[in-house]
Image (cartoon, one colour):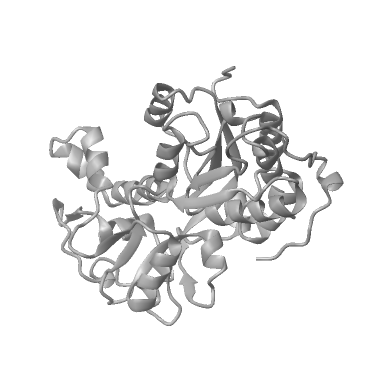
Length: 346
């Protein structure tokens, strides 16, 4: 990956040499596989433009990154957690219990979740949330009754879809993508088919019905992928009937191998996500450990650089890679500049 160096003066950021004495002089980042390519782009450009070492960026999933982030404060813990969802209250509590009390939330922009298949495979070109739920739900509504999912092919419940075996590769439970997939696709599909209403009518509480709606089948039709999107792509390469869940940017950079489906009649794109027209989109974040600012050289500079207009704005390299620029980016920049933690903090 190669980048033309950016002029520090254009970024209005100071690229001062690191002088703080510490046993670790590299910023350490881990977390979301969706945010990974953006963080990697910024890390490389940061190393080229500043007198700080290039940050170390690892993947592992949103939940995994936040778990490492919340292990405590000190040079043996990471400085930043990338996440394709907001940090949860239980994670904030775990952080606080380990001494991580001031967390700066940084929203970098937006991304869409897309459904894509082998470019020469069956024509999964149009979906509604109900289709995904009928294909992957553990229990679905058939002839007015909630039953174990009997569907083997997509055409079993929608004659407009191919008579191809149902094989879907979805993000594992530690991925932030999974939560959005559950809330904006499975849950909505469950409601649209009438399955949720039937579950509640049968005596389930609303909470139990929601849990049942996002429960996926375990007979091979739905396969959790705990790795990053490259693993999902490899599974689809090996299975012509397979369909996978990806971030928009990954799909856009693999259009020679994948074809994408619409959702609710809307094709995923930077434009349809930025307007909110495409229904399956989400904000992307990273979280900064305030206690490490001023201790780990370059941490604040890296965070500021990440959300600079020249990087995260609509004409920056992150947008070129698929990030949908945040219309409130200036507010995020102010949060980083002021080192304002969540909830006000100290």
